Amino acid sequence: MIAELKYNTILKHQREDVDKNRKLIYFFPASHVFHLIRSWIINRLNSTLSNQLIFAKGLVSDLKDRVNELGGKDLNIGIDHLNDLIKVNILLKDSIEKSNNQALQNADILLSDTIENYYTALRILKRKNNRSSIETSQLAKESCRHSLNSLQTVINGRRTT
Amino acid sequence: MAVEQREVYLLPHPFDSQVEEHPFIVLSVREANDYENTFIGVTITSSEKYQDDFSFQLTDEMFESPLGKKNSHARMHLLQLCLNEEIKGRGLNKMKPFYFRQLMKSIGDLIFHFDFIEQSN
Image (cartoon, rainbow over the protein chains, first blue to last red):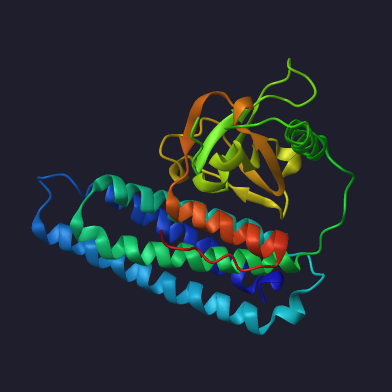
């Protein structure tokens, strides 16, 4: 289970792997890059991302199966790793979008699907994470005051049309 | 002023005009915002002390232009009713649809235990 670090090592390696692939994208648009190298980059990228997508779907499925075991545990390490992994995938997706290259379209689709799955896993962990309540923060008070000010203006009969 | 879903605006501090304004992401749709010139926004902060399970991490790549502040996150449980007329200046930014969808899914799931399903226009 993710709380017991079984997944945490994999998540860390996934992050490093995705980051390496992101660096390859910088070489991709160069016109002097040979066709064979371009094909190698695309194949490597699609292969890494396909494997990652399978892992992400497996992770979500496993967490759903074990959801009752997760309750009340400290899941912060898993949450941090997932947040890092989402970040690096978003960076890669951004690099692909900016390259504006049709040959990378499949990689972009794979990434979108993977990021969605990681967000799903993140939400499962956050729902089950053992969190303690804290005092009302200054930010929360400010937010309430904003809503109160808006409501008072509306109640006082402000017409908008 | 037309306020659109996914746009980012600055609103003044509610108690003290000397304090820095906070940015917000607009969650509600244009039709609702136009109706009474109000909108629902979610607070963005970059303060480390507020990082927790109700934080949705924001990065520059999620927006049409860079946010300009590191470690930014939306406080998903701090949803506010805002007045269009209180907006400071012009819109700062706009969140990309893919990441806005993830934000709305997270708010639905973690704040309301509801599955918000996106409707096509």
